[in-house]
Image (tube, rainbow, N blue to C red):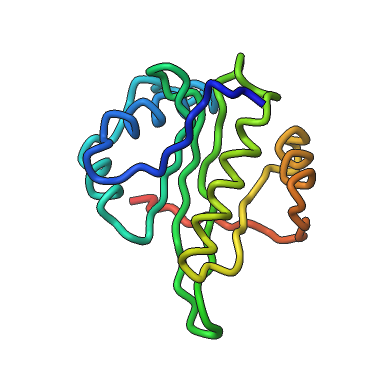
Length: 151
């Protein structure tokens, strides 16, 4: 585990750190337009109490982070959380940073009566599947459908 990494839940005022995390996501996920960040949504997301963003910072650089969305439940007490994205800079991977980010998320969820965290992993991405399994995640066989506006 890298002792030089600090972990921080972002809030309003941390837009530049969120911006840097989006650039890291773009690079690690090999997004076609690696320099694009939706600036209009950054501040709005950080002010949304149902959105969470946690980053790992080494020196002055964001080297990892995750984002998620709280989903209030209507059929039981509390909420669930959808872990939307998680990434660690390539040369900082396999040092416990991703695991620590998830632990930070779990601790945050405990304070908000969030009883379940779920995440999607592409079946072909065995690195991600093993990462979530190692953390104690239980695999579910589901189909993912996407509906897009084709107009």
